[in-house]
Image (cartoon, rainbow, N blue to C red):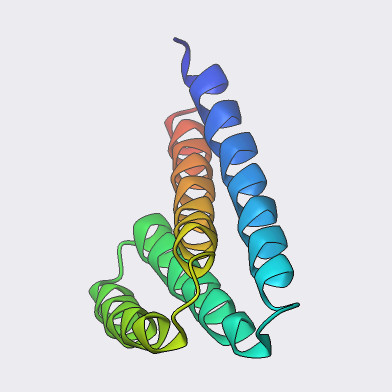
Length: 111
């Protein structure tokens, strides 16, 4: 698989996962509005991990890990089954986008 195709797949898959996670979180929040809190926190943790992957800043890894641990604890308290897939999608989507952007940056640096 070429590097350009890999980068495209990462960006598209990440965008689709973010959209899916937000949809599932919104759907679950129709029955319990508290589900929206962990959904947003998972998305924020994913964005922090994405920035950490893209910029190689260890401080962002630590901040994202702390936020992720707190969010998992909140998710256990919410007790709604849709929090798990919504959180996984909201977390993994930005990480994939960050990986795609990093490969794009590396390709531009090479020439």
